[in-house]
Length: 220
Image (cartoon, rainbow, N blue to C red; front, side, top):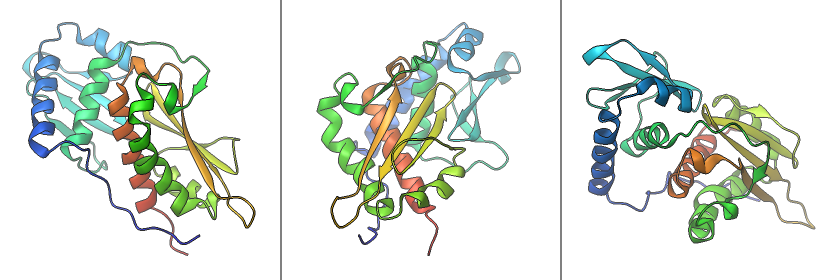
């Protein structure tokens, strides 16, 4: 199977809509009184006090600092800058987190609320690009996944668990294609993921992860 060349797809929302959603999320964050409880639920860290107070949260193995004054998100020392849609994911995670313990049960995307509605987009933008790029040699997934702090797990022909946020593991599973069977793949989640992100955001998160993995794929 030949590798496909992929770029990060549009979220489906025009830039003004993403910016408006970011503004709404920023305002909601500024109205939260109990920041310590928010940090407890999300696994984030509260920094400072008063007007300079901020939150540090891990996103894809990098720390990001969220100002509580204006919800501006800055990077840690080695963390890459983020586009607005990824910053919005961080705010939505902080606002949605319920502190639910891991269930220990894995579910597919179709089992998420309205997962069947978003599944065609999820399959096209998240799963198929991974299969196209790694399906012939699934173990090539492991090296770029390490850059996102992933750990190998024993599923399929190659699989990794990526901690997207402190309470949101994302498990990618690939099956190798050959002359008899086509390559395949799946992305699995802890059953409690909807207590941390809405389904639409999970779609965007997964396609973002897929793009980052493909971009970092080792050149043979």
